[in-house]
Image (cartoon, rainbow, N blue to C red; front, top):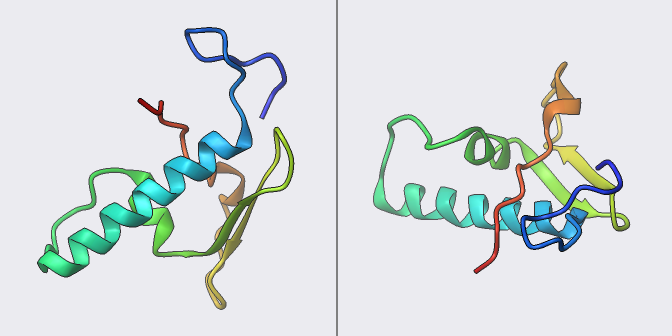
Length: 87
């Protein structure tokens, strides 16, 4: 993540914000699976969860995405989960 990016209240955007959003997308996927929903996922983040072995913040601005074994993603640099605001 680039330095200097902030939320509307001036709080710095961090890698942990993206990890929070990943965990939220993970919870959505679990609920979709439990309910038997087989339609399209609500967003890219939910699709990304099913192809992710781990998603962690390494420091304030760096996230590490690791795909599941055997999954090759030519567009891996786009696998940043969009941070969602916490209320």
